[in-house]
Image 1 (cartoon, rainbow, N blue to C red):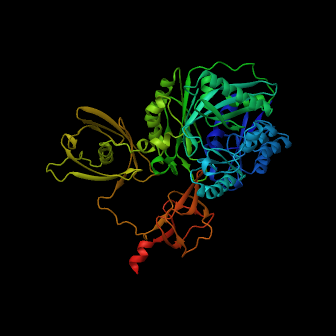
Image 2 (cartoon, rainbow, N blue to C red; image 1 turned 45 degrees about the vertical axis):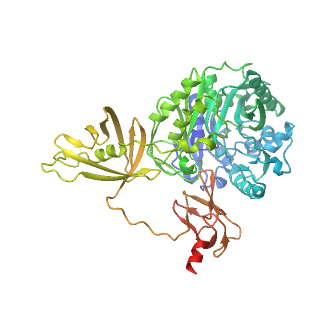
Image 3 (cartoon, rainbow, N blue to C red; image 1 turned 30 degrees about the vertical axis):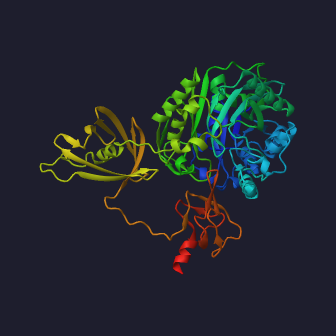
Length: 628
């Protein structure tokens, strides 16, 4: 029997595994980088071992250090979580060689399936070795790992070489393996997968289907089980192919076989030899704990001949610290509050934690289960709409709108959903009275005499900037004997945290939250949604001057690459990638805004930069002509 488990991972997945271990009476051990010294998964573990450094390559990807940590802490088993080393056969062997129990599939099975190229060969699928115009569009993918890292869609043959280079660099950084391959890119398909669970006694369960079609940057955003609208014959085929993939590799434990479904046909994508982020929807539908089953299988327990029956429908949404309207740019800062009522919430953060630049920007997974799909979707959308998420910008509004979009509610979605609808789904919410409510709450109690005057003076004036779109609002209101008054709006009640307004005969309650760690920022919640406001001075401050053509870091991160041969004085063309930034598992290109000359270059490979940092300056050709 396993007594102590080290989780070779961080954040939400480590907390998730620890929860099951506590229920089973198993002692837990965390590992942590310097950036994670105060992380929730460290606080929740019974003990923790430091991995010196912050970058994944020197911490969570160092299998030798993780094994030593397990030995030092007295662990007798290792759970890999997902990501990092979870699909690394060498790490699995190192754990076993150290005399520890590996809570995962056999190393040979990982080796067979963790490389997508070898997995396709094993299943008799021919790779695409030479790409021609007739093959376009194609998809460049990393052979190891997942999560969209090292993945590029190529529609122009001339750009293939550059995308291959970028994919190799990203894959090497994320997984320690720069191998990539090319396959046809099937547009308009649905991403459908099958959860499997296998034991050492010949039993393999196929635990239904999941639809994961709503993706941004090839990373999943909303998942559900079962996948809606699939013909029974297709479901049976998916189950059969998933079980066959498990049997041909001698698989044990939890795994996922992924397909792209288009035109009633299923195209094999890959087999993930680990637990998936979206596993809670399967747990909800089948009434099981997949981590418990992983531990039991690792201990040698046999599965029942058949899995329990499926019941109802489950939907999961991933909450990210990102701005979907700004190209999904990741966000950092203090997460003052995270509360999603009425649903299962798996998270690696608690109120007051800091979201840094080193790791994935996912804050939490919210999961709703109900007897029908429509009920589960409605329940999850409502919970997210009521959620308190105070801190960096999140994708919450996008999730709510996605769940209520007719393509999704009608189960007509595919992997191109966000390509088609991102603009409409990211329009800023507009509550016309949020700034007034914030102004009234801010002014509450400032005057010991109640705020009214015998002689009417000028109205009170306050200016706000709405985040993250930057729209500015100006609010004017009066203080009278009867209380505050604003044109067209009745003020019924005011406190520092609650304001009740009536407009056009409709009463609305606004809740106001402020936190000392974010100077001035105010979070306003009303029946119309959520608004984040930053107070502005009554007289605008002079803007900082920047040279025309200045390229600023769009987010905090690390400079991972500078264009080869790029030096000051070099000629550049509009749209040419100059600098590559990496933050929170995403790579971002900074490109030349116009054709001209690079007059300054401040970016250096390995350098950490803050948002707004000056990376380079491009003097446009038109400016050069004007100065002649």
